[in-house]
Image (cartoon, rainbow, N blue to C red; front, side):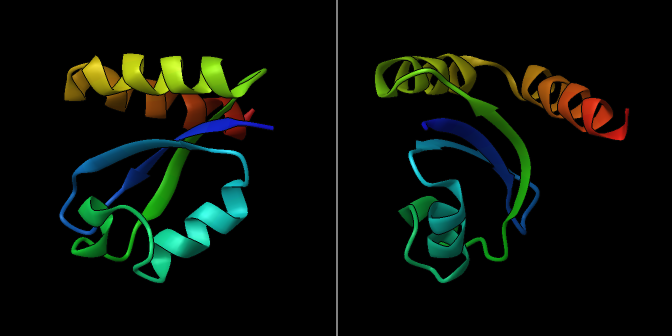
Length: 86
């Protein structure tokens, strides 16, 4: 099942990506085998994930999130964290 996810990097920046296997992708990021962007910003922390029905919709959602300003991404993360607390 495809996922869209947001990571917080060690320098406070946000990284957005998509994957089929979230656990494997997170392990790759943490091991320095993930995206070039995250390799120099380790460790990373998963702060948001969203399940998508298929790859195409995951890729579209990733693009939409990447276009958001940082403030809106943080609001998305905050809303997600709040939903976990309920």
